[in-house]
Image (cartoon, rainbow, N blue to C red; front, side, top):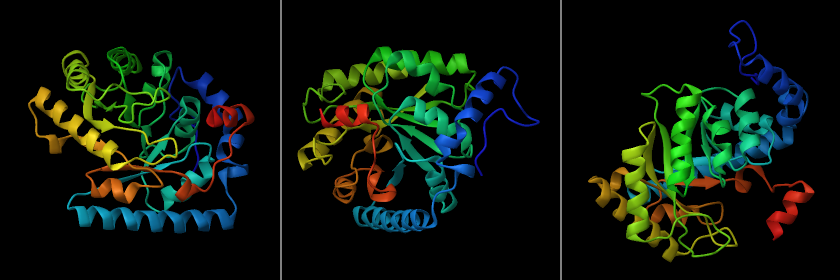
Length: 285
C-alpha cells in the first residue's frame, strides 16, 4: 500500500509541511490513481523479477557466495516498485535524489533503499532524512562522507543505526565517471577517513559503474577486487567482509562469477526507461 510518511494519527510534528507537499505529488510519483500499474506491466515485471532473481541465486551458488539483487527503479513509478515489493523484493536502487525522496515517502518502510547515483554534497541532508536509506553506494570523497555523517546526525538517525556507505572507484579511468582512482593510496585514505572521522557511517564495501555500454570488462571487476584488498589492509579486516557492488543488467552473472556480492539490475526487470527530454539529452551526451 502506498502511503505518505507523516500522514495519519501518527503524524510526526514538523513533517506536516513535507507531508502536504508529498500528497500533492503522490499521483505522479505513484504512476496513476492509487499507485496502480496496468495488469500486463505488473505481470511482466513479476516474471522478469523471478527470472533475474533466479539467475542471481544460481550465479551466487555457482560462485560459492551469496549475491544480493538490487532492483533499480529509476524513472519508474512507485506502483511498479510495489509490484516487486509484493513479490518479496526488498532492496531497491535509485539514481536521483528527488525521485528517491518521493518514492521512499509513499512506499513501505521496510524497503532497503540504495542510492546509486552521483550525489552532490549539498543534497546529503535530503537523502539522510530517509529513515530506511540502507546504503549510499557512491561515496567518492572525504568531503561527501563527512557531509553524510553530519546529515545523519542532523536527521536524528539513531547512533546505533549506522548508514552504510560504499567507496565508488572509477575502474575504467573514464573522465565522465565519478569515483576515486583505483590506487592503494586513494582507497586507503578514504577508507580510513570513513572509519576514523565518520562515526555515523559504516563502510560496507566498494562499488564501480560500468563502461559506456553499461557493462564492465573482467579487468574492471579485477580492479575493484584489488581495491577491496587495499581497503581491507588499511582497516585491518578480512577482505571478504567488504562487499563488491559491480554488475548491471548486461553483465550481472559474469560479475557474480568474479566476486560481486551486490548487483544492480534495472531495465531487465522494469523495462526500458523513458527520460524527460532534458535528461535524455544528458544521457546521450
